[in-house]
Image 1 (cartoon, rainbow, N blue to C red):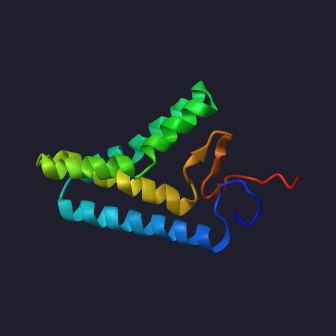
Image 2 (cartoon, rainbow, N blue to C red; image 1 turned 120 degrees about the horizontal axis):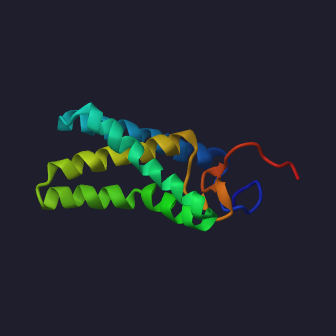
Image 3 (cartoon, rainbow, N blue to C red; image 1 turned 90 degrees about the vertical axis):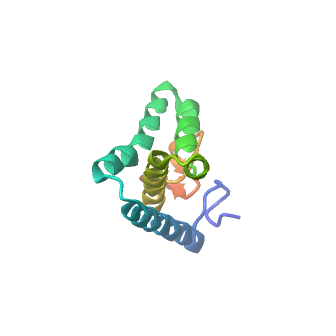
Length: 133
């Protein structure tokens, strides 16, 4: 159970651990990117690119949720990183590391994967002011 009701979100110590895990992912991905030797301008571009999925919310909460979760799950960058290794494509690894850093950054700030109820409903808890009722 989640502790503050059954909203599907983590709470308390588990939420803290998941946010620290996001911070660890961010630090690891940035350090790996620095060792990789790709340009920091590219890092900035690829770091913010996943947030283009937020435009999906213009088409409604369900579309926004699907697009956001697709670009903010570690599945994509891990697969891209693996493909980079298999096909010797270093540019793909640079994208994968910046993308991973973005996900870690968001999770460290508490922006988790979204539920269809709206942008503020995440697996890491509700974003924004909470309705006391």
